[in-house]
Image (cartoon, rainbow, N blue to C red; front, side, top):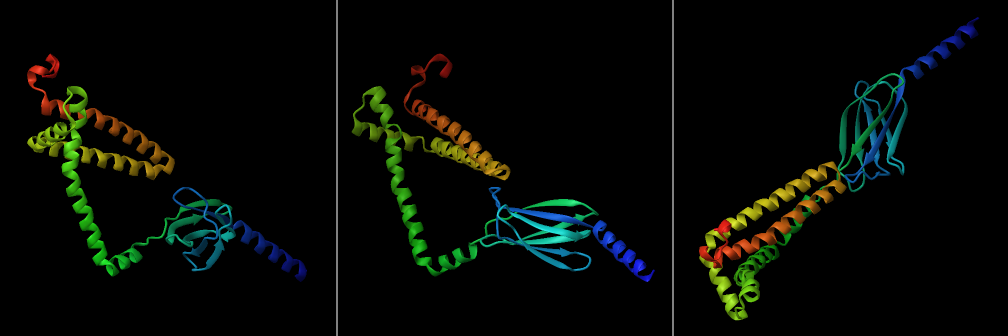
Length: 243
């Protein structure tokens, strides 16, 4: 009789422990949705403080089964990635919960800052060279801005076309400044749209960037004609609806 009672007690305890538990699978991926293997996942019971550690397999899963129901936190760490903490994981009886965790590439800002501080002279020299290059390139770009149109449409000699183009850009400097600011704003919109697309998926970001950059490029080359028209053509030379 005592043996039978002991057997029933053990069976009831085992049954309770099984019905009071569930399983948690944690899927670890990177920002491109690729599985991260060999990631260390530390699962901590918020009430008892019991810690269980698993490593992700080739498919990115870390499986905790069976595990007592309750509230948990998970710390995910992997080589080359930032440590990610997940809170608010709750497990009910007989529940099979799947938790997806996306880890980000580890920041290298500290090493970059040290490198820049150690080579500050070279860094300042590089910035100065870039600035001087831009300043030197500006007159050249102004000279070539209208020159092809003057040569092709009006038969102006190449040397004179370069000179006339440069003078026309200088005389309309304010208008060209507004023109440049407008295109800079469009570039910011393109980058913002690409960033929003990247939040959805890398593939969607590539589609958004390709579409917006193509449209902006076409619009830019079309706008070159209007800069030429407003710089060289008189009102009486324009069609009636374009005056």
